[in-house]
Length: 404
Image 1 (spheres, rainbow, N blue to C red):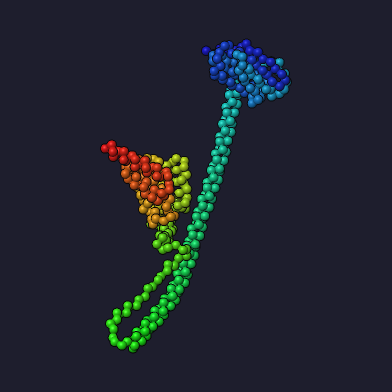
Image 2 (tube, helix red, strand yellow; image 1 turned 180 degrees about the horizontal axis):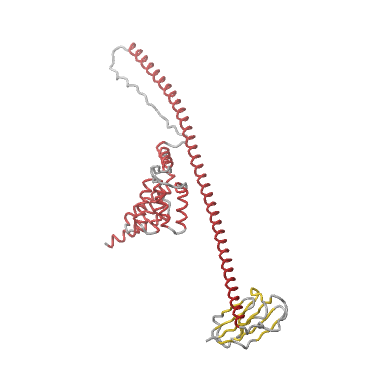
Protein backbone atom coordinates (compact mmCIF):
# COMPACT_ATOMS: atom_id res chain seq x y z
CA UNK A 1 0.00 0.00 0.00
CA UNK A 2 1.47 3.44 -0.96
CA UNK A 3 2.76 5.65 1.86
CA UNK A 4 1.94 9.36 1.62
CA UNK A 5 4.83 11.72 2.35
CA UNK A 6 3.76 14.74 4.38
CA UNK A 7 6.95 16.18 5.94
CA UNK A 8 8.23 18.23 3.03
CA UNK A 9 10.03 21.59 3.01
CA UNK A 10 9.36 24.32 0.50
CA UNK A 11 10.44 27.84 -0.21
CA UNK A 12 9.54 30.43 -2.80
CA UNK A 13 10.59 33.55 -4.61
CA UNK A 14 8.54 35.79 -6.84
CA UNK A 15 9.41 33.67 -9.88
CA UNK A 16 9.92 30.13 -8.60
CA UNK A 17 9.00 27.53 -6.02
CA UNK A 18 11.38 24.86 -4.61
CA UNK A 19 10.14 21.69 -2.88
CA UNK A 20 12.36 19.26 -0.93
CA UNK A 21 10.69 15.83 -0.69
CA UNK A 22 12.51 13.26 1.53
CA UNK A 23 12.99 9.82 0.04
CA UNK A 24 12.78 8.04 3.43
CA UNK A 25 15.79 5.87 2.68
CA UNK A 26 14.10 4.34 -0.40
CA UNK A 27 16.12 3.66 -3.53
CA UNK A 28 14.77 5.80 -6.30
CA UNK A 29 15.47 3.27 -9.04
CA UNK A 30 12.28 4.24 -10.78
CA UNK A 31 11.13 7.77 -10.13
CA UNK A 32 7.72 8.62 -11.60
CA UNK A 33 6.72 12.27 -12.00
CA UNK A 34 3.33 13.53 -13.11
CA UNK A 35 2.90 17.30 -13.44
CA UNK A 36 0.71 19.96 -15.05
CA UNK A 37 0.27 23.70 -14.63
CA UNK A 38 -1.52 23.21 -11.25
CA UNK A 39 -0.73 19.62 -10.15
CA UNK A 40 2.40 17.72 -9.08
CA UNK A 41 2.78 14.06 -8.18
CA UNK A 42 6.09 12.37 -7.32
CA UNK A 43 6.16 8.63 -6.56
CA UNK A 44 8.92 6.13 -5.83
CA UNK A 45 7.83 2.82 -4.41
CA UNK A 46 6.48 2.58 -1.78
CA UNK A 47 6.17 6.37 -1.24
CA UNK A 48 4.35 9.08 -3.12
CA UNK A 49 3.60 12.77 -2.77
CA UNK A 50 1.01 14.91 -4.53
CA UNK A 51 -0.01 18.54 -4.23
CA UNK A 52 -2.68 20.73 -5.85
CA UNK A 53 -0.78 23.97 -6.29
CA UNK A 54 -2.07 27.33 -5.15
CA UNK A 55 -1.49 29.00 -8.54
CA UNK A 56 -0.33 28.16 -12.07
CA UNK A 57 3.23 27.09 -12.98
CA UNK A 58 5.10 26.76 -16.30
CA UNK A 59 5.53 23.00 -16.54
CA UNK A 60 7.92 23.18 -19.51
CA UNK A 61 10.41 25.35 -17.58
CA UNK A 62 10.25 23.35 -14.32
CA UNK A 63 12.76 20.63 -13.39
CA UNK A 64 13.19 17.81 -10.87
CA UNK A 65 16.50 16.37 -9.59
CA UNK A 66 17.57 13.83 -6.93
CA UNK A 67 20.38 14.71 -4.53
CA UNK A 68 21.40 13.91 -0.95
CA UNK A 69 18.36 11.67 -0.26
CA UNK A 70 15.87 14.31 -1.42
CA UNK A 71 13.79 14.91 -4.53
CA UNK A 72 14.21 18.58 -5.35
CA UNK A 73 11.43 20.04 -7.52
CA UNK A 74 12.06 23.55 -8.88
CA UNK A 75 8.81 24.94 -10.33
CA UNK A 76 8.65 28.15 -12.38
CA UNK A 77 5.62 30.39 -11.72
CA UNK A 78 3.56 31.68 -14.62
CA UNK A 79 2.80 34.95 -12.81
CA UNK A 80 5.64 36.42 -10.69
CA UNK A 81 4.31 37.01 -7.19
CA UNK A 82 4.45 35.48 -3.71
CA UNK A 83 1.89 32.75 -2.96
CA UNK A 84 2.45 32.54 0.80
CA UNK A 85 0.90 29.06 0.68
CA UNK A 86 1.67 25.90 -1.28
CA UNK A 87 -1.66 24.11 -1.65
CA UNK A 88 -4.84 25.22 -3.32
CA UNK A 89 -7.50 26.63 -1.01
CA UNK A 90 -9.92 23.90 -2.12
CA UNK A 91 -7.43 21.01 -1.72
CA UNK A 92 -9.79 19.41 0.82
CA UNK A 93 -12.63 19.33 -1.74
CA UNK A 94 -12.21 15.86 -3.22
CA UNK A 95 -14.53 16.47 -6.20
CA UNK A 96 -12.75 19.68 -7.14
CA UNK A 97 -9.33 18.03 -6.79
CA UNK A 98 -10.52 15.07 -8.86
CA UNK A 99 -11.33 17.49 -11.67
CA UNK A 100 -7.87 19.09 -11.32
CA UNK A 101 -6.21 15.66 -11.41
CA UNK A 102 -8.13 14.57 -14.52
CA UNK A 103 -7.30 17.87 -16.21
CA UNK A 104 -3.61 17.27 -15.43
CA UNK A 105 -3.80 13.84 -17.02
CA UNK A 106 -5.40 15.33 -20.13
CA UNK A 107 -2.67 17.97 -20.37
CA UNK A 108 0.05 15.33 -20.04
CA UNK A 109 -1.58 13.13 -22.68
CA UNK A 110 -1.89 16.12 -25.03
CA UNK A 111 1.79 17.01 -24.53
CA UNK A 112 2.86 13.44 -25.23
CA UNK A 113 0.73 13.44 -28.39
CA UNK A 114 2.28 16.72 -29.55
CA UNK A 115 5.75 15.44 -28.77
CA UNK A 116 5.08 12.23 -30.72
CA UNK A 117 3.73 14.19 -33.70
CA UNK A 118 6.75 16.49 -33.63
CA UNK A 119 9.10 13.48 -33.59
CA UNK A 120 7.15 11.85 -36.43
CA UNK A 121 7.28 15.07 -38.46
CA UNK A 122 11.03 15.34 -37.88
CA UNK A 123 11.48 11.70 -38.90
CA UNK A 124 9.49 12.24 -42.10
CA UNK A 125 11.52 15.34 -42.86
CA UNK A 126 14.76 13.39 -42.37
CA UNK A 127 13.44 10.60 -44.61
CA UNK A 128 12.56 13.07 -47.36
CA UNK A 129 16.01 14.63 -47.09
CA UNK A 130 17.58 11.18 -47.29
CA UNK A 131 15.51 10.31 -50.37
CA UNK A 132 16.48 13.57 -52.06
CA UNK A 133 20.13 12.96 -51.23
CA UNK A 134 19.93 9.41 -52.59
CA UNK A 135 18.27 10.65 -55.78
CA UNK A 136 21.02 13.22 -56.20
CA UNK A 137 23.70 10.57 -55.71
CA UNK A 138 22.01 8.30 -58.26
CA UNK A 139 21.73 11.17 -60.73
CA UNK A 140 25.44 11.95 -60.27
CA UNK A 141 26.23 8.27 -60.80
CA UNK A 142 24.14 8.20 -64.00
CA UNK A 143 25.90 11.31 -65.26
CA UNK A 144 29.27 9.75 -64.46
CA UNK A 145 28.35 6.55 -66.33
CA UNK A 146 27.00 8.54 -69.29
CA UNK A 147 30.31 10.41 -69.42
CA UNK A 148 32.24 7.13 -69.37
CA UNK A 149 30.02 5.74 -72.15
CA UNK A 150 30.50 8.85 -74.26
CA UNK A 151 34.26 8.75 -73.77
CA UNK A 152 34.29 5.06 -74.72
CA UNK A 153 32.23 5.71 -77.85
CA UNK A 154 34.50 8.59 -78.82
CA UNK A 155 37.54 6.40 -78.23
CA UNK A 156 36.18 3.61 -80.44
CA UNK A 157 35.20 6.15 -83.10
CA UNK A 158 38.72 7.63 -83.06
CA UNK A 159 40.26 4.16 -83.26
CA UNK A 160 38.08 3.26 -86.24
CA UNK A 161 38.95 6.53 -87.97
CA UNK A 162 42.65 5.96 -87.35
CA UNK A 163 42.30 2.40 -88.64
CA UNK A 164 40.60 3.62 -91.83
CA UNK A 165 43.26 6.30 -92.31
CA UNK A 166 46.02 3.69 -91.90
CA UNK A 167 44.29 1.42 -94.40
CA UNK A 168 44.04 4.29 -96.87
CA UNK A 169 47.73 5.09 -96.47
CA UNK A 170 48.64 1.41 -96.89
CA UNK A 171 46.59 1.21 -100.09
CA UNK A 172 48.32 4.30 -101.49
CA UNK A 173 51.76 2.93 -100.63
CA UNK A 174 50.84 -0.44 -102.16
CA UNK A 175 49.77 1.25 -105.41
CA UNK A 176 53.01 3.25 -105.54
CA UNK A 177 55.07 0.12 -104.90
CA UNK A 178 53.17 -1.77 -107.59
CA UNK A 179 53.82 0.99 -110.14
CA UNK A 180 57.50 0.99 -109.17
CA UNK A 181 57.67 -2.80 -109.53
CA UNK A 182 56.06 -2.67 -113.00
CA UNK A 183 58.53 -0.02 -114.15
CA UNK A 184 61.46 -1.96 -112.70
CA UNK A 185 60.23 -5.13 -114.39
CA UNK A 186 60.03 -3.34 -117.76
CA UNK A 187 63.62 -2.21 -117.38
CA UNK A 188 64.71 -5.76 -116.50
CA UNK A 189 62.82 -7.12 -119.53
CA UNK A 190 64.51 -4.59 -121.85
CA UNK A 191 67.93 -5.49 -120.46
CA UNK A 192 67.22 -9.21 -120.92
CA UNK A 193 66.01 -8.60 -124.47
CA UNK A 194 69.12 -6.66 -125.36
CA UNK A 195 71.28 -9.37 -123.83
CA UNK A 196 69.57 -12.07 -125.90
CA UNK A 197 70.01 -10.04 -129.11
CA UNK A 198 73.68 -9.46 -128.31
CA UNK A 199 74.27 -13.14 -127.65
CA UNK A 200 72.55 -14.09 -130.95
CA UNK A 201 74.66 -11.62 -132.92
CA UNK A 202 77.81 -12.84 -131.23
CA UNK A 203 76.93 -16.41 -132.08
CA UNK A 204 76.43 -15.57 -135.76
CA UNK A 205 79.81 -13.81 -135.96
CA UNK A 206 81.57 -16.76 -134.36
CA UNK A 207 79.96 -19.18 -136.83
CA UNK A 208 81.31 -17.21 -139.82
CA UNK A 209 84.99 -17.11 -138.75
CA UNK A 210 85.39 -20.72 -137.62
CA UNK A 211 87.55 -22.94 -139.89
CA UNK A 212 86.13 -26.21 -138.81
CA UNK A 213 82.95 -26.97 -136.98
CA UNK A 214 83.17 -27.41 -133.29
CA UNK A 215 80.75 -28.98 -130.97
CA UNK A 216 79.61 -26.26 -128.65
CA UNK A 217 77.51 -26.58 -125.55
CA UNK A 218 73.93 -25.32 -125.91
CA UNK A 219 73.22 -21.92 -124.55
CA UNK A 220 71.54 -21.82 -121.16
CA UNK A 221 67.90 -20.95 -121.29
CA UNK A 222 67.18 -17.43 -120.23
CA UNK A 223 64.81 -16.84 -117.31
CA UNK A 224 63.25 -14.06 -115.34
CA UNK A 225 63.20 -13.57 -111.58
CA UNK A 226 60.40 -11.35 -110.24
CA UNK A 227 61.26 -9.55 -107.00
CA UNK A 228 58.25 -8.34 -105.01
CA UNK A 229 58.48 -5.92 -102.14
CA UNK A 230 56.14 -5.94 -99.12
CA UNK A 231 53.97 -2.83 -99.01
CA UNK A 232 54.11 -1.62 -95.42
CA UNK A 233 53.61 1.75 -93.78
CA UNK A 234 56.10 0.85 -91.05
CA UNK A 235 59.42 -0.87 -91.82
CA UNK A 236 58.37 -4.17 -90.19
CA UNK A 237 59.05 -7.46 -92.03
CA UNK A 238 55.89 -9.26 -93.10
CA UNK A 239 56.93 -12.40 -91.23
CA UNK A 240 56.77 -10.43 -87.94
CA UNK A 241 53.63 -8.43 -88.70
CA UNK A 242 50.34 -9.04 -86.82
CA UNK A 243 48.32 -6.55 -88.85
CA UNK A 244 45.74 -9.09 -90.04
CA UNK A 245 45.36 -10.59 -86.56
CA UNK A 246 45.08 -7.15 -84.96
CA UNK A 247 42.46 -6.10 -87.50
CA UNK A 248 40.53 -9.31 -86.86
CA UNK A 249 40.71 -8.76 -83.08
CA UNK A 250 39.47 -5.18 -83.46
CA UNK A 251 36.55 -6.35 -85.60
CA UNK A 252 35.67 -9.04 -83.04
CA UNK A 253 35.74 -6.47 -80.23
CA UNK A 254 33.35 -4.20 -82.11
CA UNK A 255 31.01 -7.09 -82.97
CA UNK A 256 31.02 -8.43 -79.39
CA UNK A 257 29.65 -5.15 -78.02
CA UNK A 258 26.54 -5.37 -80.20
CA UNK A 259 23.30 -6.04 -78.30
CA UNK A 260 21.90 -9.56 -78.76
CA UNK A 261 18.68 -8.71 -80.62
CA UNK A 262 17.52 -12.36 -80.52
CA UNK A 263 16.55 -11.92 -76.86
CA UNK A 264 12.94 -10.87 -76.46
CA UNK A 265 13.42 -8.97 -73.21
CA UNK A 266 11.86 -5.79 -71.91
CA UNK A 267 15.00 -4.09 -70.58
CA UNK A 268 15.81 -0.53 -69.58
CA UNK A 269 18.68 1.38 -71.19
CA UNK A 270 20.94 0.65 -68.19
CA UNK A 271 20.11 -3.05 -68.36
CA UNK A 272 21.32 -3.07 -71.99
CA UNK A 273 24.43 -0.96 -71.37
CA UNK A 274 27.56 -3.11 -71.00
CA UNK A 275 29.57 -0.29 -69.40
CA UNK A 276 26.87 0.32 -66.78
CA UNK A 277 26.61 -3.42 -66.04
CA UNK A 278 30.40 -3.80 -65.63
CA UNK A 279 30.55 -0.77 -63.32
CA UNK A 280 27.65 -2.10 -61.20
CA UNK A 281 29.19 -5.58 -60.93
CA UNK A 282 32.59 -4.11 -60.00
CA UNK A 283 30.93 -2.09 -57.23
CA UNK A 284 29.36 -5.27 -55.81
CA UNK A 285 32.74 -7.04 -56.05
CA UNK A 286 34.55 -4.24 -54.19
CA UNK A 287 31.86 -4.31 -51.49
CA UNK A 288 32.37 -8.08 -51.03
CA UNK A 289 28.87 -8.85 -52.39
CA UNK A 290 30.13 -11.56 -54.76
CA UNK A 291 26.77 -13.28 -55.37
CA UNK A 292 25.21 -10.03 -56.58
CA UNK A 293 28.26 -9.43 -58.79
CA UNK A 294 27.83 -12.93 -60.30
CA UNK A 295 24.17 -12.14 -61.02
CA UNK A 296 25.02 -8.91 -62.85
CA UNK A 297 27.83 -10.54 -64.87
CA UNK A 298 25.51 -13.45 -65.80
CA UNK A 299 22.90 -10.98 -67.03
CA UNK A 300 25.56 -9.12 -69.05
CA UNK A 301 26.86 -12.40 -70.58
CA UNK A 302 23.33 -13.30 -71.65
CA UNK A 303 23.13 -10.03 -73.60
CA UNK A 304 26.79 -9.84 -74.72
CA UNK A 305 27.89 -13.50 -74.93
CA UNK A 306 31.18 -12.81 -76.79
CA UNK A 307 32.84 -10.31 -74.42
CA UNK A 308 35.78 -12.13 -72.85
CA UNK A 309 36.26 -9.83 -69.84
CA UNK A 310 32.73 -10.64 -68.57
CA UNK A 311 33.65 -14.34 -68.27
CA UNK A 312 37.03 -13.51 -66.73
CA UNK A 313 35.51 -11.23 -64.07
CA UNK A 314 32.72 -13.67 -63.27
CA UNK A 315 35.38 -16.34 -62.84
CA UNK A 316 37.05 -14.09 -60.24
CA UNK A 317 33.72 -13.87 -58.36
CA UNK A 318 33.29 -17.67 -58.46
CA UNK A 319 36.80 -18.00 -57.07
CA UNK A 320 35.92 -15.74 -54.12
CA UNK A 321 32.90 -17.92 -53.19
CA UNK A 322 35.02 -21.11 -53.57
CA UNK A 323 33.15 -22.33 -56.64
CA UNK A 324 36.32 -23.50 -58.37
CA UNK A 325 34.77 -25.56 -61.20
CA UNK A 326 32.71 -22.55 -62.32
CA UNK A 327 35.87 -20.44 -62.15
CA UNK A 328 37.70 -22.93 -64.41
CA UNK A 329 34.80 -22.92 -66.90
CA UNK A 330 34.62 -19.12 -67.09
CA UNK A 331 38.40 -18.74 -67.49
CA UNK A 332 38.40 -21.37 -70.25
CA UNK A 333 35.62 -19.56 -72.10
CA UNK A 334 37.47 -16.26 -71.72
CA UNK A 335 40.63 -17.79 -73.27
CA UNK A 336 38.56 -19.09 -76.19
CA UNK A 337 37.26 -15.58 -76.87
CA UNK A 338 40.73 -13.98 -76.48
CA UNK A 339 41.63 -15.07 -79.99
CA UNK A 340 43.53 -14.20 -82.13
CA UNK A 341 46.38 -13.72 -79.63
CA UNK A 342 47.62 -10.16 -80.06
CA UNK A 343 49.43 -7.67 -77.87
CA UNK A 344 46.18 -5.88 -76.96
CA UNK A 345 44.70 -8.94 -75.21
CA UNK A 346 47.97 -10.25 -73.74
CA UNK A 347 47.26 -9.03 -70.12
CA UNK A 348 43.82 -10.67 -70.15
CA UNK A 349 45.25 -13.99 -71.38
CA UNK A 350 47.94 -13.93 -68.66
CA UNK A 351 45.36 -13.21 -65.96
CA UNK A 352 42.99 -15.95 -67.22
CA UNK A 353 45.77 -18.57 -67.22
CA UNK A 354 46.92 -17.64 -63.70
CA UNK A 355 43.37 -17.63 -62.30
CA UNK A 356 42.50 -20.97 -63.91
CA UNK A 357 45.77 -22.45 -62.72
CA UNK A 358 45.08 -21.29 -59.16
CA UNK A 359 41.56 -22.77 -59.30
CA UNK A 360 43.01 -26.10 -60.50
CA UNK A 361 45.40 -26.11 -57.54
CA UNK A 362 42.51 -25.40 -55.15
CA UNK A 363 40.83 -28.49 -56.65
CA UNK A 364 44.12 -30.39 -56.00
CA UNK A 365 44.64 -30.79 -59.78
CA UNK A 366 48.23 -29.56 -59.53
CA UNK A 367 49.43 -30.90 -62.89
CA UNK A 368 46.71 -28.99 -64.75
CA UNK A 369 47.44 -25.92 -62.63
CA UNK A 370 51.15 -26.09 -63.51
CA UNK A 371 50.31 -26.17 -67.23
CA UNK A 372 48.38 -22.90 -66.89
CA UNK A 373 51.16 -21.25 -64.88
CA UNK A 374 53.75 -22.32 -67.47
CA UNK A 375 51.51 -20.91 -70.23
CA UNK A 376 51.28 -17.60 -68.33
CA UNK A 377 55.07 -17.60 -67.78
CA UNK A 378 55.62 -18.15 -71.49
CA UNK A 379 53.48 -15.07 -72.21
CA UNK A 380 55.21 -13.01 -69.49
CA UNK A 381 58.71 -14.48 -68.95
CA UNK A 382 59.87 -11.54 -66.81
CA UNK A 383 57.11 -11.90 -64.20
CA UNK A 384 58.98 -13.13 -61.12
CA UNK A 385 55.79 -13.77 -59.12
CA UNK A 386 54.41 -16.19 -61.74
CA UNK A 387 57.82 -17.86 -61.98
CA UNK A 388 57.99 -18.42 -58.21
CA UNK A 389 54.41 -19.78 -58.03
CA UNK A 390 55.08 -22.15 -60.93
CA UNK A 391 58.25 -23.39 -59.23
CA UNK A 392 56.39 -24.03 -55.96
CA UNK A 393 53.79 -26.13 -57.79
CA UNK A 394 56.56 -28.01 -59.63
CA UNK A 395 58.39 -28.71 -56.37
CA UNK A 396 55.18 -29.93 -54.77
CA UNK A 397 54.51 -32.34 -57.66
CA UNK A 398 58.10 -33.66 -57.58
CA UNK A 399 57.96 -34.13 -53.81
CA UNK A 400 54.70 -36.07 -53.97
CA UNK A 401 55.98 -38.13 -56.90
CA UNK A 402 59.10 -39.10 -54.95
CA UNK A 403 57.00 -39.90 -51.90
CA UNK A 404 54.68 -42.16 -53.89
